[in-house]
Length: 360
Image 1 (spheres, rainbow, N blue to C red):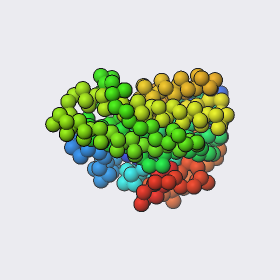
Image 2: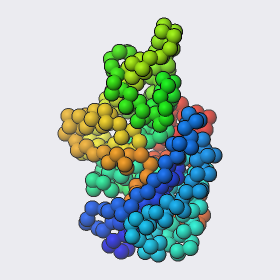
Image 3: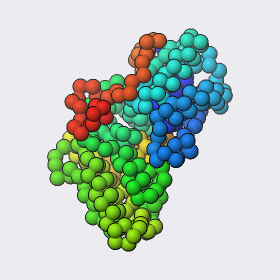
Image 4: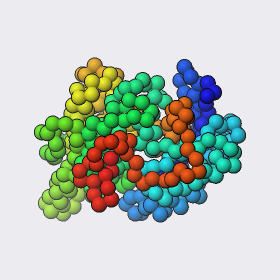
């Protein structure tokens, strides 16, 4: 195995088409030579959420352009990369298939190893890319439809300590933003609106805080926010800007309290020396600050990715590919796209996962 590895990463699991080149030399910090992302927010703006068919078509149209842009910016030709890593799941199946087929074509044409990466593992291993975090560490993964506490023991071994039994925070942010009249994506817009709001105006619930363990629930919180909105509309005939900001702030505060208290429990249970938070919700500054305070109180190291690496990106996929390649784990042309792919496949399915199966 060469001491220095350069990988091309491809990500297309939801509504961001991304490609990146990452170089890693043993004993030195990894280098992100390029990270290109084409966001699809404008394409889905009129639909109140991501439309899978539109997303898949956009991925198919943009993937080759993102790969070319990433290689050009990195100053690396395709024959110079050591392998090609691609998100093989979980995610919207059309988008995942687009990325896998693109990667297969590149790998076959350039005669390079192909590495299928779990999208969640990309987020989970990001602290090792950005901060050189050693195993083991506790991870709070809050990405899209996922929210779980994991003990990261190696690049391939993750033990789930708990997770959401219904909606994940990312889903709840998007749904609450829609019901109080904020545009998508919900997370950033709720955070912005909450800056002008009173987080104590509405006494929203903190689900499952009275129960032991690390499991979480956000569906009831979402419903409580809906009822608070309906009460305002019935009383005033509509929702005023200050009402909107107060609802956003109160909802965000409730999510923050749940995540902070459950993180405290997970640290006590795992005895991990460090806690990392990863995924799109990790970009929320209020939540970051609360989790960092919990870590400081527990005497644990706290890490969170730079904002650009919280949301979906291909640099994390390239890095996860490097971790797998170092272990000799590569795939062949039978690599299949997977809509669901748990990091801890020994843990039982979470409750409340719906007709399509467990989110976690």
